Image 1 (cartoon, rainbow, N blue to C red):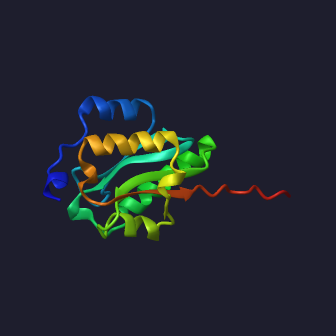
Image 2 (tube, rainbow, N blue to C red):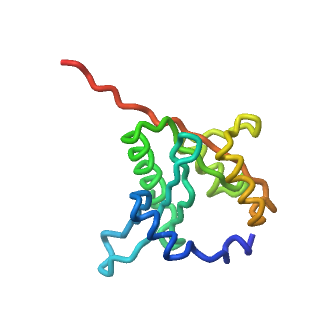
Length: 150
């Protein structure tokens, strides 16, 4: 999977679009003095769900909860917008992909249940040759917080 690891990050103009639309989050290590980004997440809205387009954590900060916190931030954003779920596409067999997301509450969406937006994302991934390795679509409901009446 060296081709995936060597893939260029999103273009600056794309990142600026996500930022301007309030669909980009960057995490910095508060313990570091240089305020360097250690993780980021980009969201789209696909088929009525908040779709995690990209979540990346710098290898030097892996296994410290950065990705989980960003996913929870995305869930909060989706909840505020009244979206019912988070979705994403990921590698099925890579330990820090599908198995990791399953631990965060995501489940695999059967191909027959993909909406038109997720099907379009899958076609785009095919064009990028990301499906050279097994990929899955995953979904996690966004739990709505009930307001207790007094």
